Length: 252
Image 1 (cartoon, rainbow, N blue to C red):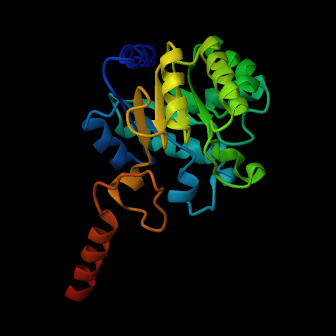
Image 2 (image 1 turned 180 degrees about the horizontal axis):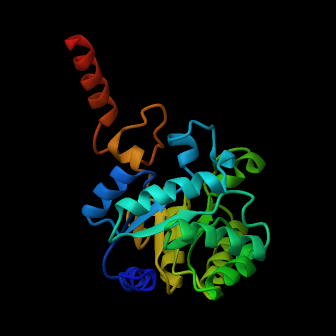
């Protein structure tokens, strides 16, 4: 199935069927999540923290994302593979397109970058080149340093207006879906209702968007050192690994 047919299928789910999305960074997990039927696999720059051990996503490079995209592409056959454009890789429309093309060459079927109306020309450059694009609004992790932390969005009238304008500009520029991160639930619902394209929420409350995305390490419990308050842990892989290793060590 082509990238275009996959994005069309995802768009058709809006208002009818929840869209599933998970982050993924390697071959075995990509294969497992793909075989489970996940709609979207995101090679997210969250790998900076949960894979590479950095304090935030601002340390992630395009080479990092390319490396992990190649691994994920070997494992996923049916899910749509979306790769993040890291910070400082889309400063101009020309750079955004060049960076996106490198991710597509690595096996991505769509790309994602952070920001709204100020990014419209960059998004147009990407989509007009035939590359599928997913937006990202609300709390923007790549701006954590300039904003002084991770903050909920949509609390003020000005923030709500910026979110609406940003979402509409991304939609007009050709986005097939938009991730909403840490947006006030009522505002996430409003955006979902006003947009023709799907919204995929994280930290926006339950059933406020057309779908939901989660960081895989949060739901399987493989990164116990930090779990977001909104995450629902469905397994405890860290404990299983510790138990298995201790059993192995005791058997020597």
